[in-house]
Image (cartoon, rainbow, N blue to C red; front, side, top):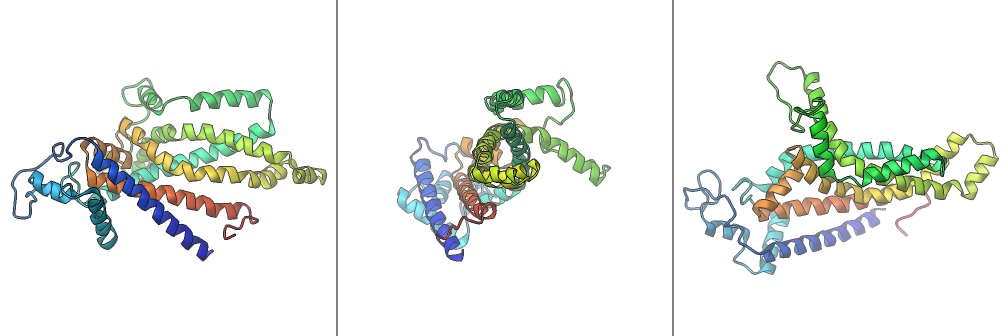
Amino acid sequence: MIFYLAKRLLLALATLSAILFVSYVLLRLAPGDPTRSSMLDSGENASGISEKGGFATNASLREELGLGRPIIVGFWHWTVRVVCRGDFGRSASVDPGRPVVELILERLPVTLTLNFWAIAVTYLLAIPLGVYSAVHARSWSDHAIEVGLFFLYSLPAVWVGLLLQSLFCEGGVWPVFPLQGAYVYDDGTASVWRLQYEAFKSYILPVICLSYGGFAGLSRYARSGMLDVLFSDYIRSARAKGVPECDVVWRHALRNALITLITLFGGLLPSLVAGSVIVEYIFNIPGMGNLALLALSSRDYPLQMALFFFSGALTLLGILIADLLYMAADPRIDLTK
């Protein structure tokens, strides 16, 4: 197992390096000058950094971004700085002069919390519904669930988010939830439980927007995987031995059907982070998605490269976790071979 993990980590490192190189090349080849769209401060000092911490001149900013070097040389200098010093650079425009790692670590907990609950809701709802549809295949309830899930899957997240805001947020038809997601105002008099309750309410609508699409698709995969297993010979043998139907479905059939769901987990994790860009923008959530949108609109090269690094690492981590979960679901799988 140790040899397998070492081999996978080396492969992931090579894949991540390729992802970062392509991303860097595309950023450098994009038309326009990022220094012209950056918010530069005034008051230059000897180091080329203003008193407020931002870049004082276009020259100092171009030197920081490595725009005067060839693409290969610029990427090599960026890689050496990251590997040797753990320095991803300073923000060029979103928060000029501030290390991009600090910006990411400030917003990362919000995005992780949002996506954790979205993944939990997706799997907790999709698996039971998929199992129920498979057990009652081709019944009227199965057809009704299929129509409803395809309808949910076809709805765009932007439209759903705006609809939920107009219906259930402040100023809407039923103003139950706050309009600004993940925002809790503390006037100093509220208790800890009250603050936790308000924070919980602020996450409900964003989690719904993030999870309904994955829930609709995942439940159909769960149904398909269960149908493949329910007609297997060992399931017929278990039923012939008098094993209760509940044990047949949930202990014998579901465990083998989990292979499909585990495979989808490797792609669900990064896709939820990518989808949170839209959701965080709609609900004004200060997370990684909102930060990525700011970096893209302001052409903040160091921040974009750091976000590419974290997104690529998260994708490869999801694939590795899915491979390890294979062995937990089915002991017959030996990844070392």
